[in-house]
Every structure is written in structure tokens, then in C-alpha cells.
Amino acid sequence: MKKLVTISLFVFWAVVVAVLVAGLIFYQNNKSVSQVAKSLVVNIPAPATPVVPTTPVAPVISVFTLAEIAKHNSANDCWLLINNKVYDVTSFLGSHPGGVETIIPHCGQEATNAYNTKDIGRPHSARAASMLNDYYIGDLKK
Amino acid sequence: MSMRKKIGILAILLLTLIPVGRWFFLEPLNYRFFNFIGTMTSLGQLAGIIGLTLFSINLILSARIKIIERFFYGLNKVYSYHHKLGAISFALILFHPLFLVVSYLTVSLKLAADFFIPFNNIPVTYGILSLLLMIILMVMTFYIQMKYHHWKMSHKFMVVVFMLGLLHSMFIPSDISRDMFLRVYLLGLGFIGLALGFYQAFLSKWIHNNAIYNLKKVNILNPSVVELELEPLKRKIKFIPGQFVFIRFLSGNIKSESHPFSISSAPEKNNIQVVVKSLGDFTSDLKNLQPGVHVSIEGPYGKFSHLNIENKNQIWIAAGVGITPFASMARSLGSDYKIDLYYCTNNASEAVLIDEFKNIEVAKNIRVVPWYSSEKGRLDAKAIFEISTDLNNKDILLCGPSLFMSSLEKQLISLNIKRKNIHFEDFKLV
Image 1 (tube, one colour):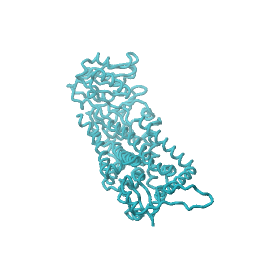
Image 2 (cartoon, each protein chain N blue to C red):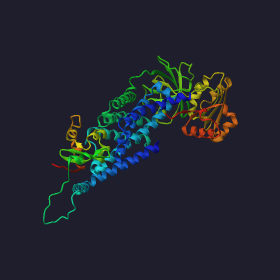
Image 3 (cartoon, rainbow over the protein chains, first blue to last red):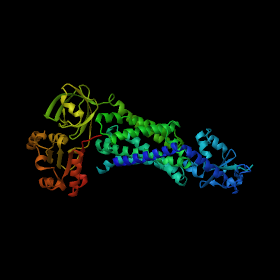
């Protein structure tokens, strides 16, 4: 039993210290990396035009129609439309604190109301909103 | 008999499988385990649910309830399960946040780091504080050599750990908050555990129905061994020979925690006697006790008795102060028993009860074999075979230091004695 306790304690502190050090000390780097990553995601669907320094170009944002969004309606491929923004939350489903089954019915659909009320009249936290941003892939085609 | 010994462990398994089973049927498993992150999150939830359930059970085990003792066949077995379950539950609770952090790691390191920092979110904070306190208390239990009463005092705070853990599990958004059955079940079991644990840790000293005895005599048997004789003030405890009691001194210059002691006197006597060897601070203090001190006696507990074994042809092996339960058995031994008693000590002066056993030997069907290791070396199974012969038809009872017992058990089993015919009294109670 002592062995079990020793190993568990060792693994626990190893992971916690590693995550805290990585997350807090490299926070600044981390932030810029994730911003870069986000801008990459946003730009991927755009035609790969070389940036011409002389003509400032507005950032290209992907746009999707309701029909396109509706195709992504399963646990293996789940997009949500919230406040006219499209999010691919497939990789997040399993880690939704409110459970995967609360999201699945909204996959491929307009989910603003569900997101704002959690279906029970309570809003998501600011933290949830910041997490959601990480899954942003484009806007609804007007 | 063997089935009865398993009821306790089966009950633990059942109590743990109920919430796990419910969790498995709450949603389709392919939703829970459909990708790596989902799997990690699910494992984290399972670790939390099982850890919490085992923790609840462990608090219930710690409360020294008579009926639970019966399910486990002896309070020392209950404590041995308490020790194991505590370690398993602790390991699961340590892994619970580690599995859950994986999903945050996939988003960002910053978010994952935030997950481990308290005061971002109230239910998570309960969990973090609970876990930190638990780590401190478990390190004290497993790695730090402490004085018994300091350790015991520290361990009471497991109740606080549990309370924080229970708050965490009830307020965090999860299957427990969403499913009424899981909520009611875990809250119910947790509440029972909390109530019993709280009673045992903080109230049992004041509210109990222990018998009160008066210390009548302190016999100093040798420089490190004393025999205490206690007489009942009102209620007299009923015990069978071989059982032990928890004794707490109500006055006098002595620490007031309860300590377990085997009774050495025969049950039919009005007064009870215990033999104590000075090991820790507490037992050394006993020598300085004056008659007239009142003590509170809780019990009796334990299943270690010749009366609980069908075979009346028995071998008793005692080391040092492990002779105590055998003294009670020998003093009340029926004429239909046939006993070989090995009394192992370093030398003759440590064999404090040997003269009395010599007298009993004359009157009853018991053969006493003194074994002084300074003369003959450690007692081994081979010697027992030579002296007692035909061991296969006898049951063997062992009482002494755990190393002494486990070494003899191993030797006996290697000589084809069946494990079920070997019985222990673990003298070291936690």
C-alpha cells in the first residue's frame, strides 16, 4: 500500500508542478503562440495569397451557410452556431463539464440560446466564453 | 465461517459498484469514450466517484461499530481494510484531477495551470483544499514517524478533508449534480460516513456507553512490563477470552487517548487484568499510575479466541507481550481442549507469566514450551513440527509482533499447513 501511495504522490506532484510551471512561467509565450494558432485557423480556408506589404488586406474570415453548418451534426463532427459565429467543438465534447449529452442535440444547429442559458436559464462563465473562443472557425454567411 | 468473513469485503465492493454502474448507464459509453479527451475526462470522473465512495466507507469503518466488526471478523481486520481502502481512495483522488486536466491541456497550458490554482472557482477550491490537506495527513500517516497520540490527533482532520471533498462533489457541475440517483446515493453514503467519522473523531470521548472501571492494582512484572487490575464501578463488560478493549484514563497524569489492550484475565472474574509492555510514551507512563484512577473501557472487540475455532486441538504461539490473550484463554480453558503453548521471549526474565502458566499446565490439558531465543535462537516451524508433531490436525494461533507472525506463517505454509488453520492477532492496531 505504501508503494501505491508513493507512486501516486510522485505522479501527482510531477504533473501538477509541470503544468503550473509551464502554464505560469511560459504564460507570455504561450499566449502569443495561441494567438498565432488562432489566426492560422482563421486564415486556413482563405486562398494562399502572398501578402503584399504595400496593399493592406483585411483579414479573411471563413463564412459558412446554415446548410454547411448543419452537416456537422454528430458527436464525431460537431459545429455550433452561437451569436452568428461558428465553432467546431468536436475535440471539446468529452471535456464539457456539463456533459457531452447536453451539447450533442445542438450539433450542426443554432445554439445561441442553449449556450446562453445552458437550457436551464443560467449563463456560462466568462471562463467558458474564453474557452469557446479557442474553437472559433468562422462566421455565418449573411 | 469463511463466507461470513467475506461479507465485509463484498459489501464494500457492492457499495462501490452501485454508483459506478449508475455512471456507466447514464449516457451511451461511446459518448463517454469516443475520443482520447473524453476518455481521460471519464476516467477522471470515475476516479472521483470511486475515491469518494471508498472514503465514505472508510469513515464508516473507522467508527468501531460492533456489527461491522462481525462482518469483517475482527476489529483488527476492519482496521486493516481501513488502511488499504484509505491508500486506494487516496491514489484515486490524486489521479482524479490529473485525468481531468488533460482536456484543459488541449486548450492551453494557461487554462490547465489555472485549474490547479485555488480561488478561481468555489467548488474547485473545495476540491483543491481537501486534496492538499489529505496529502499532508497521508504523508504523516505513511512517511513520518510520529508519536501515536500526535498522529491520532492529526488523523481526525480526515473528517474535514472529507467534508470539503463532499462539498466539492456536490457543487461541481458533473454527473453527480445532474443525476438525482447519484446525488442522493453519494450524498447519503457521504453523510453517514461524515456523521460516524465526526462522532468517532470528536464526540466519542464525551458521548459513549463505555464501562467505567477503577484501577485497583499496578503489578510491576519486570522493569518494562506491568499488569493492571481494574474493577468495575457499575457495569461490567462481557468478553470472551482473547478479546481486547480500548482503555482511556479519565484522571491521573497520563495522556487521555484510548489505546487497545488484550485482556489477560478470565471472563468469569469480576475484575479484569491487562498486561502492558512499555513501548511508547503512553505505555511507559502506565508504571507511574496510582490505584484509584478511573478508566473508561470500550469494547470488547476481536475474534481471536480458541472458542471461535472448531478444532479443540490447538497450538498457541506467543511472542513477548503477545502472551496476554493466551493468558485469558488458558485461565478459562475447558477440559476438552488440548493445547501446546509456545511462549517466546529473549530470556527467562522476560517470560513474565511463566510461573502462572506452569501452574495452569498442571491443572489443565495444556503443555507449556518456553522458548528463549538467547538460548535456542528464533522459534521456527521445524522446531514446532518436532515438538508438537501431526500439525495438520491442529489449528495454530499466533500473537506477537507482525514480523514474527508473518515469518512463522510463511514457514508453516511451506510445510503444507493450510492458511485457514492459522489464526492471528495483529497486536499493532492503527
